[in-house]
Amino acid sequence: MPPTKKTPRPKALTAAHNRLMKRLGASLEDAAPSTLGHGNAVTIVCACANTSPLNLARTLKQLGVNGISFQGCVFRSVTKLGFDIDQDDIPDSPDTTLSEVVDAIEDAPAQEQS
Amino acid sequence: MRHRFITSALVVMLALSTWAKPKIERIKAKRGSSIISIHFDNPLPSAADVANKDFWIVAGEFKTGIHRYVVSSVEPCLSPADVKPPDCNAVDGYVRLHLTENVLADNTKIDLTLINNTAVINVPAFQLSKDQSGPLGTSKSKNDSDVYFSGSYTAVVDGDPVWDVDAFAGYMYPLKHGHLGKFGFYGQARTKKSDNADPNSFLDYLVWQKDIPLWNTWLGPFQTPFFNYRVAGTEFDRDGKQLNFINSPVVTLPLRFSGKISDPLAPSVTFPSMTLQFGTEFVKVEKSRVLAPEKNWYTRGLLGATFSAGYAPEKPAFDSITFSSAYQVRLPTAGEIYFDKRKAPIDRKTGKRGTTPALLGTQARHNVDSKISYNFTKYLGISFEHTYGSLPPIFTRNDHSFALGFTLTLKQTTYGRYSILRP
Image 1 (spheres, rainbow over the protein chains, first blue to last red):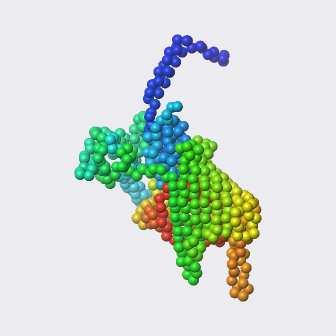
Image 2: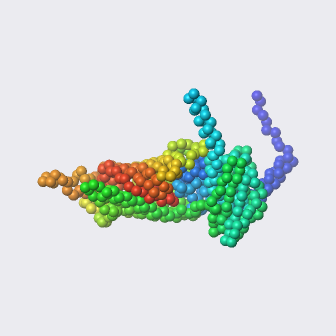
Image 3: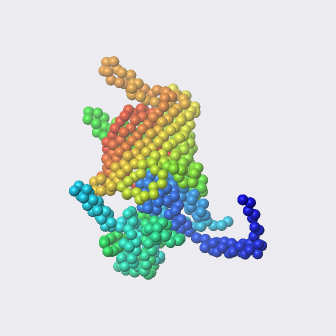
């Protein structure tokens, strides 16, 4: 089978594509969320507890989750997504339910661009 | 005939489970917002049971009366069919009630009642938090301090009573919002199988703690490990005749006896979990009871493990039963003090052992502490504890000892105890 040649993209099409991407980028920036949001919070908390959202009502102790590692995981995940939170604002006690952690982080504000 | 009976029983059980009332786990609301979020416990109700606006009666209480709210719509997040971006995951287990108006600023409580075709559920009135933006319910805030006390007293027939006291206090402060870990202090007083309640082992430390993200979230059954560096600490006994300075890095690796828990976990289950610890203790003897070389440094290898599991049906007179165990071994590289009753000289006339002498040795120092607690209520119960081994600084060897006593359990606020003090 002969090697396929990469067909050059017409300049006009590339420019149009770039314009479109720029517009999309602009619109995405406009729509950038100001807070972490419930959906992201649930995803992070469940990933850090290695469980499904069906167990949001369970405590860290019930799920056999270590609070220190869990708190570190949630903290890293939230800040990596570009939101601000103090590590101590993330509850990590054995009697904390996952939904309480969701409550604590879902309103984390977006990091200020320097 | 028997098969028919079993089939009938199964059918009845299935029918009962479908009739189970939806259980509301918690509620969130804010003054000035028209949304009330209601989280359900497993098994989650179907949307048909809760997602009708006419099923809900909502009232706000204020000092001079009540205000009835009207629910305009119900937004369910109960099953994959409900998934709508951006704020509803596959199965989040909650519904949002959209009210026709915002919760009034002078409301202090919210009353909720759900009346569907099969059940009437009234939720006790929830206090709105003083913070205007705060969520309704029992949200926990910062848990950066930790105080713990546990004790038991056992009367012994024809012998001295046995005291067991274990108390500690600590505080951790996040450095640069937590990006640089946490720094804090912990102190612990301990006596074990003593004929009086005076503590005989004191430990205090300055600690730096940081998680080590070797992997992102979980690696099979392992969570990410974390590092505890007891930067400076002291170990001393009751009369201060033995005083050691300690510098100790320890890595802790938590694990759970399962990878991902995908299915709903019954509320009564506490999933078994463990931690493994690996570290060293650099010890400088400041003052010694025996002719040990003072002002010299030596090292103890330190290995440890903790285990915990439980079952909590939360029924009258049977709230929970929990099992926890901690093991640690210290391996000194130089002669270190210890007391062993078996080495006490025997009086030839009476046949009784005399005072236990302080000795030096490099043997491994094991310590095991296992406890089964049966709680009648959430905070009160009895515990059965087994201990073996010895603890720094004077390593008084306890043979296998068993203690039975009443236990008062306080709500645990942090993991400090198990992460830092054991070991």
